[in-house]
Image (cartoon, rainbow, N blue to C red; front, side, top):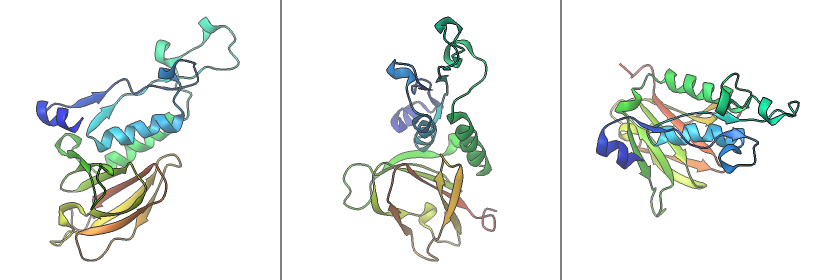
Length: 194
């Protein structure tokens, strides 16, 4: 996906990421957590992600009367929409121009295959890890040069962030990824953003 975005220089959209739902077809049976995860994964690759859902309501016995949002619109009833709204609000708070950021796959040290997907700019870096372990992650902009950064781990199911301590010097930070999904958001502190 980063290569497609770079080659064409256009916004990239994942429209069919499957849907949160409980129908028997695989395209409509993602858990809410899986659906929400698609947004963070896509963002880390510089991609806009579309949402839909196929949640059957147990109280509606007639299949033709099921108000599946995917086919008929209406009200979203799944558990992913509030988490996607949290994603949108948190991302908007960075003030970053999404289209100006650079997506990449990152490997750390002797990791071999990519360990994370990253989206980086002058004042923001999103890191979505693919694997567990302790990884030395490069701070945006090399970490130095008078730039002060803030890093938060994002619990997008619980819709919370937890600030992580960063070293006062150096260009990397050791990140212990003990469970997946694990996502970090680095932002330039307000004091140095000017």
